[in-house]
Length: 575
Image 1 (cartoon, rainbow, N blue to C red):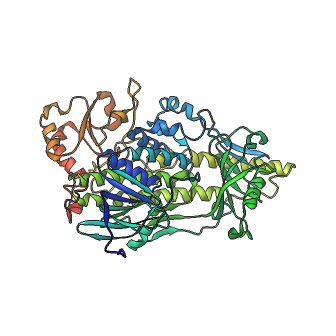
Image 2 (cartoon, rainbow, N blue to C red; image 1 turned 180 degrees about the horizontal axis):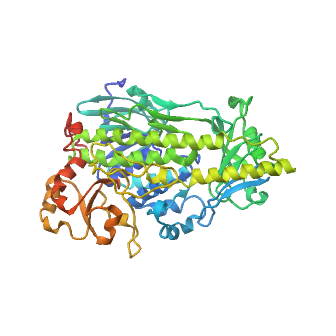
């Protein structure tokens, strides 16, 4: 895409130019900055999000925040520590309660996770927190990193790509001034209307425009303050309030546990979104309440539910897509924001490895190979959750104080209870994304367990998340991993290979050797396991294969696979 003014000053340079300052862009800035790789981020907004937006941080994202050192800080954000994170369903918020899926408050997360095993064998539990708070934490930490510059109130006008890199034309929205940024790579994390995606000629594929009784069609989002809500609602507090009746279906997340809420309702036939006023937004909330509970509307907008879209490409040359620019979800299951975080994690270590000269540029081809299938998988799960909730319509008598009304509520309650467990207890979705078939994963002939939303079977089959365990001293196994690569040995396996340190130095990779008791071998079903920077198992093997570690690491770094090495090379001097 050509810029319009060739005489503009190239004012800034960095290894990576990031377009978009939401969760994906900010997480990528953190991943790069922690590795000493420079990045410049631009975003049209004046700052991080004002509106709550996404409301659920899955456990896998929390594990990545833990790896970066700020999971506890994020867990302190949002709801009070003792606030229940229940998902509850009502005819209206002051009406009948239909079902409730009880979930623990943040204050118990650290205690509870250490007692869980099987599907929930993890370093972190999920956290219910509005995206606005997460973005603020990500921004604070990114700004502290040397080489990272965040430029809100700036937008990308266009860019050129050449053998030497990317040159982006940037406009400051305050005064209209323009300048250039030079970079080795460009990452478009600029949302569903992504200018970067459009410049590449990449389009979304998948399902859109799906109509449902709920979560399919035009939606009204209202960010509001209602100090009287809890006093007026005759039910125990919840994190997620769902309204289920034939007149006004809605869901609402508590933002701060005191008086702020993110309310979303399906627009009904005849409601003109272009003519909605503050008073109408307030009235929609009050209809869902079933009472004239006073509120202050802080903001409102409309959006479309019913998307399950994935871009038909995530890379062209030096340009990459992540987050909503690459995939667009209906927000059931909270998968959009969390998928975006893992995009950034996957791309971050690879960009750093190439910029620092550890890997050939062709390593970056594995980003789309790995992340696009996961995006397809996750949008499909979100679509299924939306179908389960949105295609289940309330009986006409569900609000009646009659025997028929009682029976309708009993039937709805049983269904919604089952639905809540299916949508909000999803360790399989959270932990089960895999990179099978990736050219930088070394397969061992084993097959992973079946992919299921509500069941996760820990496995060290290469291509998936490393199995987690708590050590005797209460430390997470993940806390022993190196920030970059980790070679786990179960017992003293590598001592006969004195050249291991020299091999690693020769390759140029940062690899930590971690020794675990032989009792942990059953968890990985191997004597050795190579763990990537994103905590994915790249390879596992027996003691007799210890001498092949140089070849294995070379493959995992993108050096030894023909599919990657075609067209490979070294890029990057703007660290």
